[in-house]
Image (tube, rainbow, N blue to C red):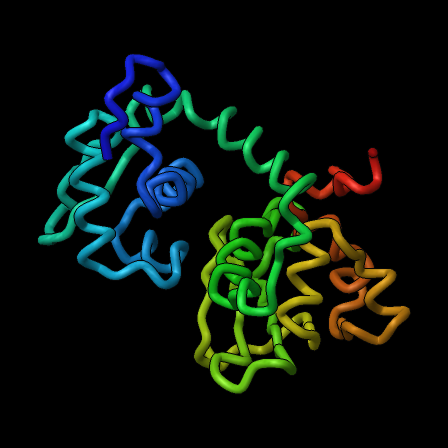
Length: 228
């Protein structure tokens, strides 16, 4: 897309204004490196379109790819120009929390994206120094209703198949309730009081869930209607 203008905003939009591009940059800045990881964070994007957008970003000098050792696949890394977009994306996210959250629709609550964010939010340094298994059961889902997070040695894996391990904490709720808690639109206390969420298991982990699983960095921002 070209605008035919010398305006720097127009020139920047030619690079990051295409559909999906800014979300691909979001994922790369958040640490996604493999094609499959990017697909998971982006949801409905087709593999061919993702490939095309990654090629465009590489041609523009926004990312570079490196062949995975011993494999045929590649990993994708941000260049300096891409890294400089981080504060801009944070500002865009802050604007969205203030002015666009009222546009949320039921179909926007994507369970796979939610679990990716929850996986990234687990503070392993706040967990016991043993393997911790967290199970989520989403009552509003018929497909992929059960998920597990497994924290071991500072790493957190997510899966939608029973790993056959003893579970330390059980969450039973809906995708929208859990997403609203993570975004700061609700809270564990409020959701428990209204019986929208049940958290049972290891008492220390249950009582301190907000300590070892952080919410969105935008959680403190009030909606626009609260500041006007």
